[in-house]
Amino acid sequence: MLKLSTMTLDLFADQPAEITTETVLKGAIVLRNFACAQEQGLLSEIRKITADAPFRHMKTPGGHSMSVAMSCCGSWGWVTDTRGYRYQPQDPCTGEPWPAMPVVFSQLATAAALAAGYQDFMPDACLINRYEPGAKMSLHQDKNERDFSQPIVSVSLGLPQVFQFGGLTRGERPLNVPLGHGDTVVWGGPSRLRYHGVLTLKAGTHPLAGPYRYNLTFRFAR
Ligand code: SIN
Ligand code: FE2
Image (cartoon, rainbow, N blue to C red; front, side, top):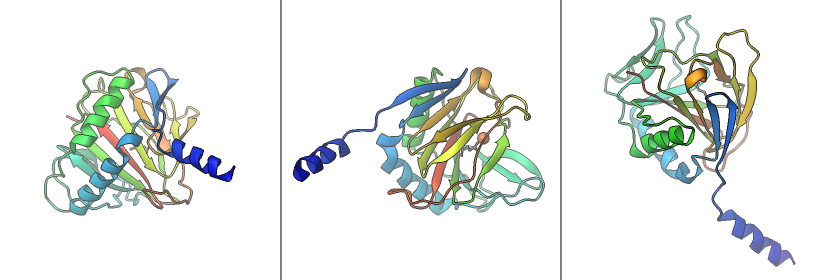
């Protein structure tokens, strides 16, 4: 009896995580488990990128150090410092161009956008966020990009964290969307400028990502 149940568990362990689609708001779609099949490749590329462009805690224009550690890859990287928010082609820490966007990243982002109904998404910027327990991101809009007809694609890896979708104005009460490893959120069209953020990360250990949640945010910046 015990043997049989162990065998059954083993059979299920080999099943790929099922991808399902949830439209949470008009133009805002959660693709559950969408990135699971690429988990190893994505995490190994994060390690390579951040060997060259290390994670750092950037400062907001107000002078506060962000709790999330960030890096970037692609032609453009998003940065913030006391001069403001912007995209730039070089990493301010090294003076070098940001590491190239790996093919496994761009293909995943294009496929996720398509699965959510947005064709021909070709990201030129990927922000890599690393949250440790206690880290969060307050509600904000992604609005430093030039072309708001292009969606945002956001991939979660590692520990679970609650994502929040607010309204088009800051005051609206946000919707809480728990995100797990591999879940991918796409927002565009009428939701492109929605406020969004994540609640404080709770401590835990993920089998592949350890004590962290990683988030890859793909944009068409320029
Ligand atoms: C972001 O808005 O840049 C990150 C959101 C997230 O970590 O899911
Ligand atoms: Fe954002």
